[in-house]
Structures are given as structure tokens and as C-alpha cells.
Image 1: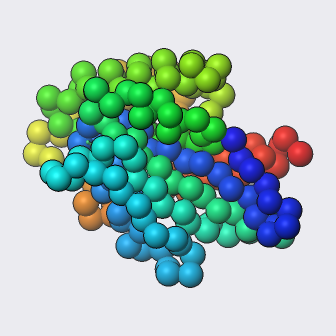
Image 2: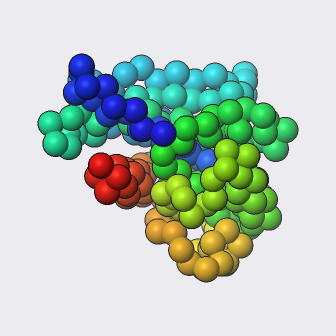
Image 3: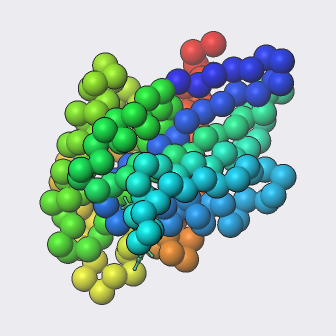
Length: 196
Ligand SMILES: Nc1nc2c(ncn2[C@@H]2O[C@H](COP(=O)(O)OP(=O)(O)OP(=O)(O)O)[C@@H](O)[C@H]2O)c(=O)[nH]1
Ligand SMILES: [Mg+2]
């Protein structure tokens, strides 16, 4: 849920990177952190295990310009993808404005992608939300893998009706990282403008 601070003329939005374990959510955020100039970002906070798996979340605030004289500050979060961290995933979704679903192209992760989308749907339902009510874009990541599955095959299990914008990515080298972020922010902003 976006919050407007009239005193600072600032609007805050929450974008959540969702997807199965090891699909590259944290890698996306790290790339954004590296690329955004110092004066437009805050510190990146990562709560991770020793082997770099997200334990609770990653958090990065970035400023993405102005609308109608208000600074737009996007709070980017990643969820921990490992199946047993569902309580954290649910908590992080609270108040979400937009979602980047990061799917994994590896041939042995097809089911994990589908399972994660199902889990997202269930967790949103706990907040009385459906997938259709929250701007969502899909990044099909790890396109560089030699065993990368066809984009259409992956899409068929996570978005069979073809409702969401899809971007291909290689997050490790920043390919296709900003495009999905820009698209989801655009959708989030246009919703806000429609609602006022
Ligand atoms: N080949 C390849 N590897 C990638 C890509 N993106 C991320 N990785 C690697 O995949 C592994 C997992 O990446 P993370 O970003 O930690 O994955 P995550 O989705 O945050 O995982 P959890 O925190 O456990 O949910 C790391 O070794 C990354 O370097 C990519 O586009 N291509
Ligand atoms: Mg992570």
C-alpha cells in the first residue's frame, strides 16, 4: 500500500521480488544497488545465511523520479525463496504495491517456478488480494544457462493465460534487470494516478 508523506512531498511504494529459491532475486537487487547513483539510493540491507541464501529479506530504497511534484521512493524487497520460509514471505507481502516474479530457466526448476507462483497466489489471498489486483511482471532469469528451457514452456506453468508482461534476464550481468522494474513501477504509478 503506497504511503504519501505530504510534509516531505514523498510517495513510498513497496515492490517485492518473489520466486523460487535461487532464481536470482537477490542478484537482481544487487545489480540495481550497483547501478543506481549514490544520491538516489539508501543502504541495501540483506539478512542472509552464511551461504548467501536470503534468510528473511533484502531491502533497498531507491528514488525513481518525481510525479506531480512528489518524489517517488520505491522500497525494493526480496523474499526468501526456500520453501520452508513461508511465514517470512507472507509477512514481506504485507502492503505490497507491485511484484517482480523472478522465474528460473533451469530445466530442473520448472516445477519450483509453478509452485512459487501458486504460493504467491495463496499468500496474497491471505491479505484478501488476488494476482489480478496487484501489478505483476515476470522476469525469466538465467537465460544464459546451457539447459535453459523455452520461455514459452516456463510461461505456460506460471502464466498460462499470458496476462503478465514477461522479460528475459541474466541478472548476474544486469541483463533484463531494469526493464521489469521500470514496467512494474510504471504500472504502480499509473494506478496511483488513477485512484486520486
Ligand atoms: N547462470 C546464472 N546464474 C545466476 C543468474 N542470476 C543469479 N544467478 C546465480 O544463482 C544463485 C542464486 O542467486 P540469488 O540471487 O542468491 O537467488 P535468490 O533468488 O535470492 O535465492 P533465495 O534467497 O534462496 O530465495 C547465485 O549463485 C547467483 O549468482 C543468471 O542470470 N544466470
Ligand atoms: Mg535471495
